[in-house]
Length: 291
Image 1 (cartoon, one colour):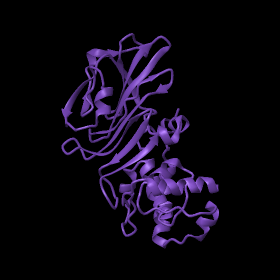
Image 2 (cartoon, helix red, strand yellow):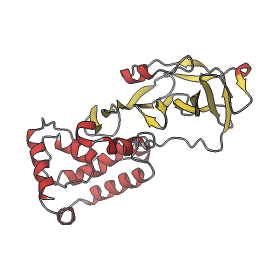
Image 3 (tube, rainbow, N blue to C red):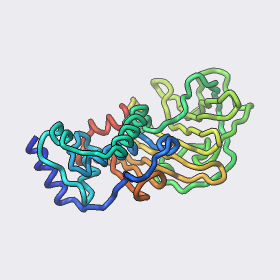
Image 4 (cartoon, rainbow, N blue to C red):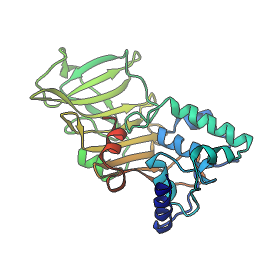
């Protein structure tokens, strides 16, 4: 324990610091605001009051974040004794409880960290082609364009599809083909691109859409043999006419970062490293992507 704390002190001393505070003690956090946040954002908000008093976290994600600030000073001693000596206002206690409650409904993995619509029970149709409409172009980071979406749906539009291209069976030799999840009102909840491989169908990418028609969550993931090599996710705010990027997660096997551009924070925008191969190792990556 002492060796670990000493290492943390050294890292804190040599790392370039930045004065980033996310939690706002005076802000009245609404349920609507919390519903837009992902697991990582909620966890950061819930942990900051502890970090401000020097708490040492078991999470690499949290420790790497706070050690990079110029205000965090880890305290020697056991976590139990440190936590017992901390004092929080009634407002801080209430906020942290709400953040933790909201985070408990999500997962600490890149594809389970956002509150997204449950696709279970929706009608599923298969298509050889999916075309796009209602374009609302957005500037996205390079990983999105590098992964691409083939000749199918655009990553910045709401989808429509042509009945003449409907595949009536669950399996197809089309490469790729599209699995479309349709709500009872006829709107599209999600489009998934799949391709046929030697060992069966494998996942290429997925796009999810909110009821207003704006792209809300997008994470193309290239998988072969169950291994994930790229990560690219975006949460969007607004509607078809004023869609804007609220939060991005992008990276690869070596590094995954989260960039937040909108939300109930003390400072915006901000960037947080979720995984760094040099410090965290492949086991941490596996946990992050949910493998």
